[in-house]
Image (cartoon, rainbow, N blue to C red; front, side, top):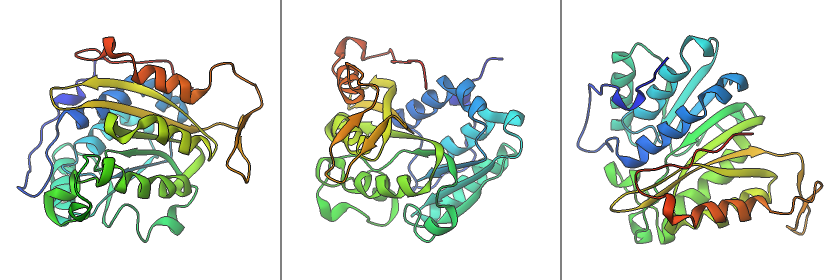
Length: 259
């Protein structure tokens, strides 16, 4: 069956809610490219942090379809207008998720700890002055502070707490966010990573990175990394090499095999 996820109809909008753009499309494309693996994963709890218009979470539910029977979906956003717009978008497509107006997953960490099998995040990643981070309204969707990392660096430890042992995280990053450093940071926590989609637009170079727990990666108390299989090319080096393949940017994506 052919899936045209990027064509889903949005029936609601608000001037203070971020509308789907290249980053949203790239994230959905990454999920779509990994659909067969997601179905094999059989996620029981799927979550989006920062649902905005509802484009991504609605696309995910439509993408998984009846084959994800029994799965639960949760989406959060700090912007209360986004919660309403997401609700209306989902209703128009006949799907349902629990929507919660909160910052990242505030108030949910204990309830959801270790239980999220699929976490998707399109964070505020645009480098901005720090005083723009966390503002009300649509600015909360893009203002990322210095190097665009202020909100990302808050999300990562929350993601680590929420993810189940078999959980996968898909995150949108920008070249300015230093994706290799993000991967090293997650590697210290025992997570492998890879770029699922890489895309360049007129304004930005996007990388959709997938993270998953790898039992062969261990982090000791001194934050040093060991790999029991002693792979010649480290995961972070692999991610870095993908980021540097500028010839693949433009209209093409990098879609590699998944774990």
